[in-house]
Image (cartoon, rainbow, N blue to C red; front, top):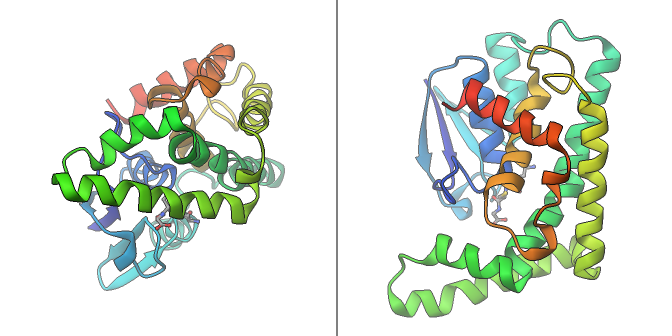
Amino acid sequence: MVTLYQFAPAFGLPNPSPFCFKVETYLRMIGEPYETKVANPRRAPKGKLPFIKDGTIVVSDSFHIIQHLIKTRGDKLDGGLSEESKALGHVIRRTLEEGTYFGLVYSRWVDNAGFEAAKNEFFGSMPAIAKALVPPIARGMVKKQTEAQGTGRHAPEDIYAMVADDLSALSVLLGEKSFFLGDTPSSIDATAYAFLALLLWAPKPPGLSGVIEKHPNLVAYGERMRNRFWK
Ligand SMILES: N[C@@H](CCC(=O)N[C@@H](CS)C(=O)NCC(=O)O)C(=O)O
């Protein structure tokens, strides 16, 4: 049985981290039995979540986890894809994980309105002293990360415009299809769904509100994935 170590669920969604949410969605998509445990990233092998334990094997990073599952369980989702479709899936994944992700992080941790909602969700149950001290420290650390990566140096409207461009591109690529690479789900749908579900259903600051809803096919896709794998 695979044990998935991740953050606690938040915002009424399985996970606030798109990388944890992606791995859990993938496990459901391939019908692999699993359990989840809430973990502290500071104790994670690479200082980030998710990681898994599969028997005695520990694997960190959502990409390497899925590679491990493919190697040990077979390629249940992508085996029939053409090389071109695989390449498209790769590029969509990198766009979401290396681009859109930082807009999402900014909206939640740096943007004042986004942080108010996130603060209550992540730290609301802490004792009073911790609740006063921990959120600004955590926020400062994440802010530094977004600045080091580059996204945090832009004006909020420019950051959200970049997210909007990513979503427009995704909407065009999805088109009328049921899933990103055709009429059956593939591994890229685990990534795409995790990001789109968070953008659709987690609280967001005014700068991001209505951005994804401009694309009815992405909204319908989110609902399709939720009904199929998360009901
Ligand atoms: N490339 C990694 C990224 C994982 C990642 O960035 N996780 C974040 C949460 S979304 C994390 O654990 N952050 C905690 C920290 O940096 O202290 C993956 O695909 O799993």
